[in-house]
Length: 317
Ligand SMILES: Cc1cc2nc3c(=O)[nH]c(=O)nc-3n(C[C@H](O)[C@H](O)[C@H](O)COP(=O)(O)O)c2cc1C
Image: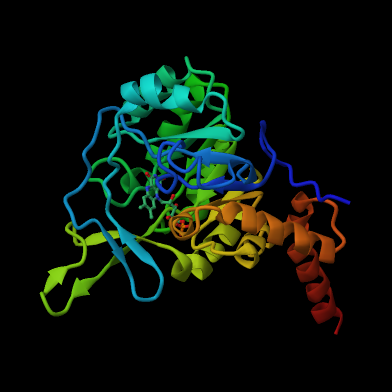
């Protein structure tokens, strides 16, 4: 019997719970011939800003010796008007849902972008990026401030009825509080983690590995930290949580589901294996069969049940 891989994130219905993370899948078209798009329930396109951006100076990517990645792209993108006119229409007949990622310098810029986007019927949901560590304005400074998060989610909510996902930074001290603010102001889901702030120095040239000195750290080494932050947020909100950070195989993905994530996003590892979603989907369904589950959505309950059982044992013993 086939495993039901469908997944519901608020009103957003996906055929699989695997999503391509923003910034790691271009504008959506670049990978179409080198991977099985249908393995992805959705793809999140590169974060778009009100104006085109060339991004930060180079070097802006560095692969760390432990299999991680430092990047400081600085949200290089074509800008919202070109995106709506040229990039979005190319995704019209895609076999997967399109999630649009946006970031502004000010709260009102976020609202204006949502208003412009709402005229297009190509996209299914929004991911509001309040967590980029590589830009001077907006980005992480919004995602670490409860008041700004509140105003920002509120304004986006007023401008569209389509599902809103807020992408959070793991660098926020009060992450649960930020996630709760998103929920209370109308977000349909939260996604996390964006990159951690990291840094590396070439000890021979005495130069920073990345021109902006600090950068976003991603890939397999961040997985345990990302999983802990997802677990924290799952326990703080009732809306769906989309988990990501260092996922490189089926086992990693399953851990996020067990921790309570409704769906997962894959970022850095897409660069290593563009067809990774298909492999992960196979591994997840195989695991479900082993555990006698009929759907991937049943995974979320498994770990919680074990914990309740263990707690009972400890108390009664
Ligand atoms: C090169 C690169 C560019 C990224 N660009 C964006 C972006 O434009 N918007 C965004 O929300 N996240 C961006 N991210 C963050 C990823 O979407 C993801 O949150 C993060 O890398 C953690 O997941 P991973 O370890 O699977 O990569 C970028 C990551 C990388 C490596």
